[in-house]
Amino acid sequence: MFPLRVPILAVLVSLALCQEYDYDPGSVLGPSGPNCDRECECPINFPSAMYCDSRKLKFVPVVPTGIKYLYLQNNLIEEIKAGVFDNVTSELRWLVLDNNQITSAKVAKGTIDKLTALEKLLFSFNNLTEPIIPPSKSLEELKMTNNKLTKFPSGLLNDKENLTSINIQFNELTSDAISGAFKGPKKLLSLDVSHNKLKKLPAGIPSSLEILYADYNNIDSVGAGYLNKLPNLQYLRISHNKLVDTGIPAGVFNVTSLVELDLSFNKLQSIPEINEQLEQFYLQANEINKFDLASFCKFIGPLNYSRLKHLRLDANNITHSSMPPDSSNCLRQASDIMFE
Ligand SMILES: *[C@@H]1O[C@H](CO)[C@@H](O)[C@H](O)[C@H]1NC(C)=O
Ligand SMILES: *[C@@H]1O[C@H](CO)[C@@H](O)[C@H](O)[C@H]1NC(C)=O
Ligand SMILES: *[C@@H]1O[C@H](CO)[C@@H](O)[C@H](O)[C@H]1NC(C)=O
Ligand SMILES: *[C@@H]1O[C@H](CO)[C@@H](O)[C@H](O)[C@H]1NC(C)=O
Ligand SMILES: *[C@@H]1O[C@H](CO)[C@@H](O)[C@H](O)[C@H]1NC(C)=O
Ligand SMILES: *[C@@H]1O[C@H](CO)[C@@H](O)[C@H](O)[C@H]1NC(C)=O
Image 1: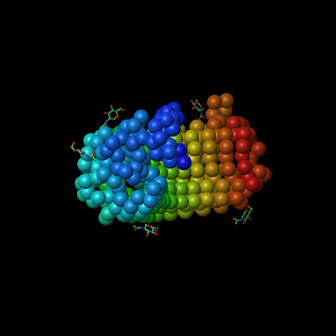
Image 2: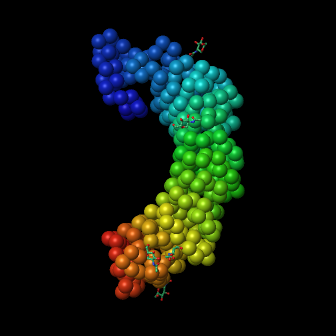
Image 3: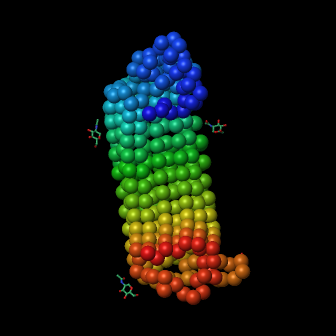
């Protein structure tokens, strides 16, 4: 596998160096900096990166001064011992720990809790039961998918003014366990809480949010006015949940910002009202048994029509013949309406 983020040219140059000076011929990264842990590689032509990925490491090695980008993914790490980051607490920007076996209890005090400049924390496919959040106010991206998170305490992200993306899908989070968790980051754009145990959409989300994915949970209703608090939301996915008609207040999805709405694989019997601006609408695999044109257009006229392009209604209890004759005027931009 190619190392992440090393420009091709740098790799070629270091390959050439390898040949000329007979450095370790097995390495594609070229000679290592002097303080590099001997299990890892710190390319001299990219001295701020340390590559320790995919080499069966059991521990996080001591990270030398000057390292900003640290790659530790695909190892057998179970533990992060105190002190390993002591020389980079205010320098380390990216920490990649994906695909290890780290448990929350084995992340010692004096490690991640000292990192004040971290921008990216990638900690997916581990055994964390609670999130580990660095004190860095510069955090931009947080990925902790495929762990065993059962809680995400409120307030942990309060000072993360630059955090734009949170991925915590494939965990064991309940609605109570995340209440108030995402209030802090005022620039948050994207939140993925799919494949958890939520009973409702997350509460208290910053109004900056543009993307919210909550597929594969136990959500049976959406609170009235929920989307009015998210005026920038464009993409909303709640597929593979337990939504029923009685859990959908009138007009709850009728907001102008939405471009894509995925309600597929639920238990809806009628089509919720949507705004004229919506372009993609997924409703396949529900129990829909009538086609109510008023869900798409309350009025039809030269300027009053649905912008819908794709509509999926397959695996429901309706066919093309359920559509009223004036549908084509309302749905004049729909190039693709699927019934089967
Ligand atoms: C850590 O910093 C100390 C003090 O600057 C230095 O002596 C030591 O060599 C550094 N260790 C590493 C692994 O960079
Ligand atoms: C991490 O979780 C996996 C899968 O559940 C398990 O097989 C493994 O023993 C766990 N490792 C640790 C260190 O807890
Ligand atoms: C947040 O991002 C802006 C723009 O990139 C930057 O100027 C600012 O220093 C960042 N804030 C923190 C706390 O890192
Ligand atoms: C959506 O809301 C707007 C503004 O309140 C309203 O004019 C429109 O008829 C509604 N659309 C549907 C399909 O209910
Ligand atoms: C039709 O659309 C126009 C322009 O968007 C709007 O001003 C008007 O109120 C709409 N008419 C109806 C009956 O909704
Ligand atoms: C499907 O629709 C038909 C005709 O509207 C109705 O007779 C039938 O009971 C419906 N089946 C289900 C499972 O809702």
